[in-house]
Length: 98
Image (tube, rainbow, N blue to C red; front, top):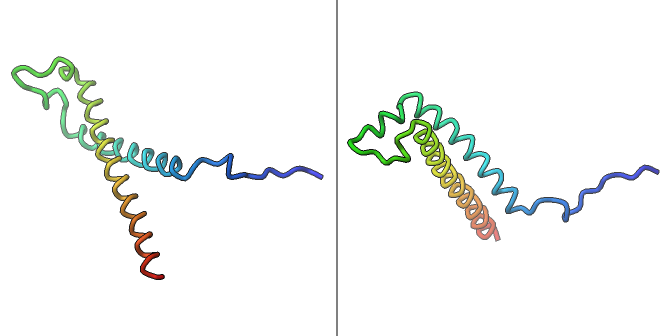
């Protein structure tokens, strides 16, 4: 008799980690698109064209990096707020139906 694989709850990821992974991945993809669209129009070297730009931001690659992480942070915040609102909304709807 062949043994079948059974998934137990111990081998699965906790629900919180699954949600965290989905939200971070979605915000990463959104940041990729935002970075592509933004830097297709704007050169980071021209954005820091100042009398004395910070030394760490004088490089073009640093501008791309800072921009990407900025877009990722904004996308992650938006994703987490959306997930929070959906989660609290479904909880409130369940209480109303009781």
